[in-house]
Structures are given as structure tokens and as C-alpha cells.
Image (cartoon, rainbow, N blue to C red):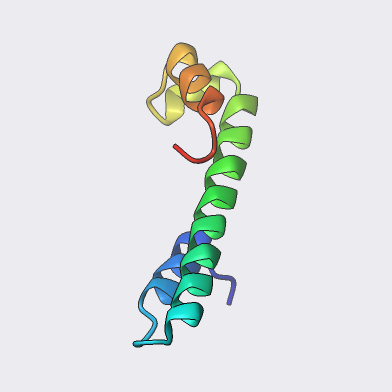
Length: 73
């Protein structure tokens, strides 16, 4: 079964109590996963045509603004 990035983030975020170094490494892994998912989503959003943007309730200007944001926001 394929897991979405959000599902994987949720699994990582629910980890049991870990040593400090493991917690830091896990936090970094979760952060990098979120950034990667955001970057991919925005990259795909930038490629959608007006018809598809209308289907998801976004104007071309809204999509352009969202897709131009840095991946960490």
C-alpha cells in the first residue's frame, strides 16, 4: 500500500520517547519530508492549467502566488 507524504509524517511524528540525538534526527527527517512534499505540491500547482485550477477553486493569481512561495513556508 502506497503511503502519502502526510501519512509518513504522521507516523514519524508519533514516535515514542527517544534519546536526544535520535529525536533531533527524527525532527530533521520530518522537516525534510514536509519541505519535500511542499516543494513537489507547489511545483505541480504551477503546471496546472486554468481549467484545472478552477476545478480546485483557485484563480491563476492565487496559484501563482502559492507556487512562488519558498518550500519552507
